[in-house]
Length: 423
Image (cartoon, rainbow, N blue to C red; front, side, top):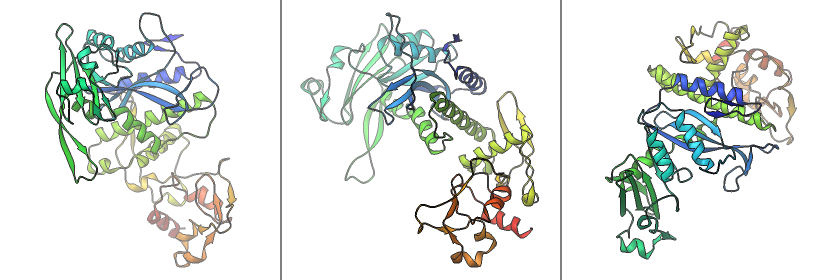
């Protein structure tokens, strides 16, 4: 029931394994990586469902992922399973599985939050040839002299004041020379605790915003805290991007929710690699949504079912696509902005409907280009639920069969006008 270092998950395990292997085959990780928790909202009954009241989605699938901090690439992910062999905790086992996916003795610097950090984890990661650092909770192996320094409502306690941690930017440390573990108590907005096995007790600075203060303030900070603030946000940044351009539908099954997340993650990784390998000025300015449409059109053409034709045949430029099997993604040799228009045929998802509010109307998207002088007289309250555009009943079929863009939110009025003028 297990494949490699990852537990096998029913119904979606084969797909997860395939995507994870492709990611590890195609990506070259930088030195700084981050491990963090991922929650995928779902409400169906499943043994993998977890109740997380402190998260945005109270019912969700929890996963742990490892990502590259510089480019924002997700390298591997694991399910949060309730496993405990009595010797080590389940969180420690998941961390070791993720670290085991990295190249042994490669010297990665792995940043984690206080859910994962403990002295046992730091020592185990060092034995695998990597360094680790992050925030730490109480009773995770910190020295009592550091663990006892706390703050209440932003004010340090007596122990912190006695050690000189009084104001923002003050910090103290303790070094365990036997295991080379650095423990730090740093006063930011409150007292934060850090542990590391790959940083020295060096000082750095960070910038902070303050209310009723113009600009940013520069405050002192230990080096481990400054590096943590820079590299720990990798997984959170990836989640933010996936929420903006998610392909997830309104589904109930838990494994479909997970499938759409894996699909979005793979697409985001492909976009990042595409920009790294296409360094020309135009490619660097291509929006993420546009590159996603390019990918969909290229997949249709390679499968033999996405030929572009009709009145836009003279407008579209050839793509001249080449597939690189070793990298696992597509590169385009000849692209221009009109490349993103493709033919869309009617299917069972496109239906015309009248808006519930009769006063809610807008210009017909097709007639507004064919009859630009009558824009004020073309207002209708019929629209396509799937595309989100207003259309006359007579214009519905022509729009979807011939002139609908590849994305409902991506329109090229100039191209439409040029194509319509040639009819």
